[in-house]
Image (cartoon, rainbow, N blue to C red; front, side, top):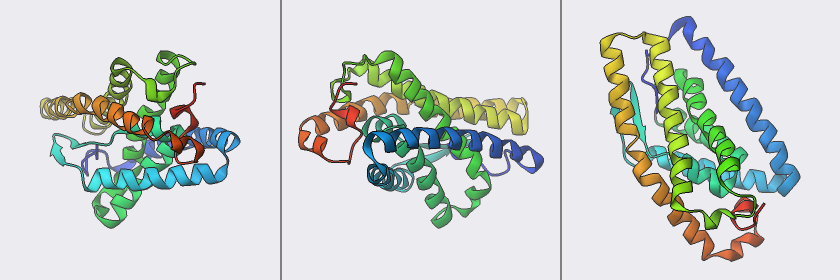
Length: 225
């Protein structure tokens, strides 16, 4: 989902500052809710864990360029389910920043584009979770269909934002359209794997219920809302 350098440049890149600012504002609102629910230390701890995981996802897991961007296994819905919206959002933003600073400085001009591309789909996952997961259901008891819906929402959102930035920056020429379609087709393959990862991680958490007495995971993992 790292948009290729030069796809959006010049004055057009200013739009990404506004979209990222909007996403950051929403993330702060969710952070305030997390602090009220679990306390500041819990928010910081989950954010640190999320950041380390995201940095690892970018650098360790397979990734390859396709069309206008790169395909990554980011596991956004997994981060949301385990740590909550705010820590996952901060983790995505900080992990992306660390990856750019230390390994891919050529991606830094596109940082706000890539941040928007990650955070807005994450918040869409949060909204969807409220609709499809009953209040009396802990996350460790999710069904495959629910995990698939959340994963599809995140990955589909990433593809949609990459397509938006590509068309916004380069127009609707045949070559650009083909590049967007090739990226979208490759990226949606992640949807096949992510729900399985979600359920595997949740199954692991279910077998470690002692974690419910710690601040490592969001309370909804074990406790029905």
